[in-house]
Amino acid sequence: MRQGPNYLGPTMNTRLILLAMLAAGCTFETDVRISTSSPSSPPRLVVGITVDQMRADYLTRFGAWGDPEAPGTFGRAGFRRMVDEGFACRDHHFGYAPTYTGPGHASIYTGTTPVVHGIVGNNWYDRSTAESVYCASDASVKGVGNAGVDMDGEALGSAGQMSPTRMLSTTLGDEWKVATGGKAKVIGMSMKDRGAILPAGHAADGAFWFYGKDLGQFISSTHYGDSLPRWARDWNDLGRSQQLMDLGWDRFHEEAVYAACLPDNNPYEGPFKGTLKPTFPYDLNALADQNGGMDLLKGTPGGNTLLVDFALAAIDGEGLGDDDITDLLAVSFSATDYVGHRVGPHAQETMDMYLRLDAELARLFDALDDKVGEGQWTAFLTADHGGANVPSHMASLGMPASYWKPGNMLDAVEQALQVQYGSTSKDRPWILRHSNDQIFLNHPLLAQRGIHRDDMARFVAEQCAPQEGLSKAIAACDAPALAANDPVVARLLRGHRPGHSGDVLLVPQPGWIEYGPTGTTHGSAFAHDTHVPALFLGCGVRQGQTFQTTYIRDIAPTVAQIMQSPYPNGTTGSPISDLLNDGIR
Ligand SMILES: [Zn+2]
Image 1 (tube, rainbow, N blue to C red):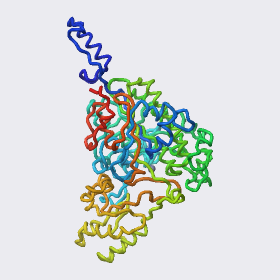
Image 2: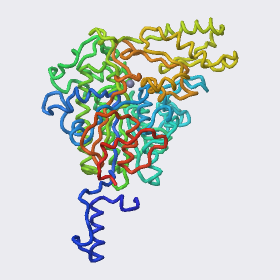
Image 3: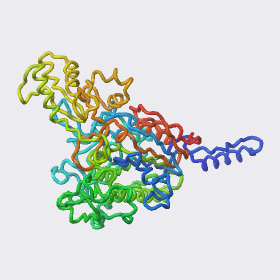
Image 4: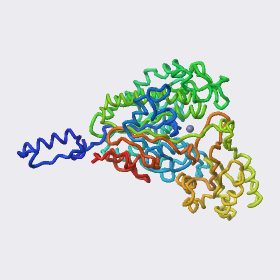
């Protein structure tokens, strides 16, 4: 139990004041003035919602501000409830690049950017081992599933060897665990491991991610304990995943509702393996063999349904929100990202995914009212990155968008380096790696030949610059000076960790992506990838909206103010004060 009157709810406060007044023989009229604005006590539960690859325009395109009765728009109880009763930040951005899932989730919950929290990509080149590392991988832990710890490393394999150990700063949940002497509960969950682990943080009670194939269950790792909690094992035993596979996926509404989308069968969408057309209806059981079995749920609406089911089981099983110590539940919906990668932003499948997600959010919010109590919880919703329009679709409309293919350019630059700085053997090139639009030079070889790193980086940037589809190429050493007058470079710098990130930074033109001819991706410093929703609802949140620019790194300090929590230790964002209720004490 927390100490001090600040933590007592208004009802309790009033009751204590009345008792004290009676004991002292006071009367209202003479001795006590009661404030007309009732102080707002912290929420019992904070639910952080991330919608993977959700662009800001999806809220408006699918009608969060329009007529709730119109067909094919969001209903009253999901996204629209956050807009109508809560607060919307309408110019919300990632203040950094690369804009990927790992950095996005880490930034939301650490209140800072990759330069500080160290999650500079989903994968990045690690100079010390000369290998690419994954943001959540940790060989020192083992997977944990219903069958117990993955002792021989075969049952779950590397899918279970995950932890937040590569994240270099604390999360909201980490600080709150310390502040409450470990009493607060902190749980993260997602279909993706990194979407569960990075938000939950280092000291979380649990993080759970989905293992498909023929299992269809949520798993964890020994970072969080040697067994799954009872409620998670019980949930896994229900066999809910197979039920959702059996349901398949057809449109939520009649086809006319999707008229603003592309036709169902179009060349800008990718089909599942084993089929020729990317069209409704999808028979998931028939697709299972060639598409990872129940991993199909990761990219179909069943994945979002599973996650809400699992979240409700966690709320009951962990007793989240059942006392005055604020608990934190981080839920990250991943199916939205997989569908975007496969079919892009203007597919009927994408619209259908969001209409169905809206219904799942409504189910979640209704359950929170029921289980935790209306006005006793706070939710925020944002995304981990946006996504580009499908370039082949844009090109068909005469737009300046295309596919960025750096391979030939990198070969040519390596050859130019051999001429300029001397030849090397084939297995010791000057360019070690191209990763996350950064070029990594061979530092040991540079040192051996006595060549200055910055000179070579500037030479490489000059060689790259004329490449078609490239907006700019800059040596990392020059970025700080350029950043003052170039917002794109400033974003790159916030995603660049000196000594760990690349020596040359490449910026493909807006709308250009390194990807196949169907579907889309993300990762750039431009608006299609940086502009995402930020919605806040519930305890401590004022109704309204702002069009002033706000940033992903501002979310954690804002929520910390509502929770009365210390900031994550690397916080560089600021609270979005417009949305904070005056009653917060
Ligand atoms: Zn993605």
